Image 1 (cartoon, rainbow, N blue to C red):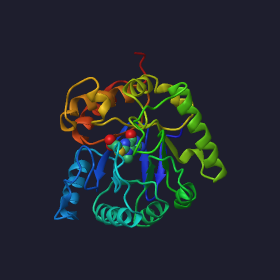
Image 2 (cartoon, rainbow, N blue to C red):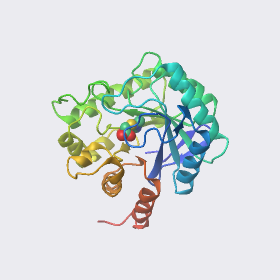
Image 3 (cartoon, rainbow, N blue to C red):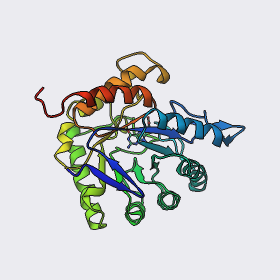
Length: 285
Ligand code: 8Y7
């Protein structure tokens, strides 16, 4: 596996696992929503402080999202999403040495963000919306293809799989084929099983436990487990109190081959990863 990816003007080195910090610019995200909103508008100064904090704590990437995809979330208009995301990209790109990831399913958001300096595209809908794969391909940026069963409004209503691992692997095989047809090289693709997106807790834990089964596809694996409700199926904790459990899950994922961990709590996760990195990587366990 090639260990580095060109993300616009920056290089993403994946020879070691890295932290992607979550920068939500939505008024309604489930775990940190609304903190960057004041008087109904985006508070750019607060956004810059949050970004600064995460970069200083060791985030190599920041994932900027303007549409909440929590279970049951209502869709946002494309104009509203564009507005939120572009303000944030502009504010972050000019100030920090960090790779900006764009959490969006909208082709125009992908295109315009890339123009303003974004370096990575993250689509929870796996670039399945009409025009999304083509728009992503034209940016020349790496993409993270995430698996989701259903749509956010209804995905947690009785999700079913023949076999969760092989069903998801088949999905990635199909998407990789679509990328090939769209002339997007495999070296530019990251895959993500999409924890919590149309999966029961048991299915989520099964996926995590067998994460190495996705490595056979040859793409780096990204995981998002931070503060998610699979934790609440084991521990009775509010989202903000799921930090320790989230770090534990991130370590399990990295141990099973994940290369990018998408998290709210950058410092806690980066410290844990620093310990993982201190292990001699070529020694037998
Ligand atoms: C994920 C994600 C979210 C994830 C990737 C949340 C945008 C929900 N989760 N993107 N986005 N993977 N690639 O709880 O697991 O953060 S939003």
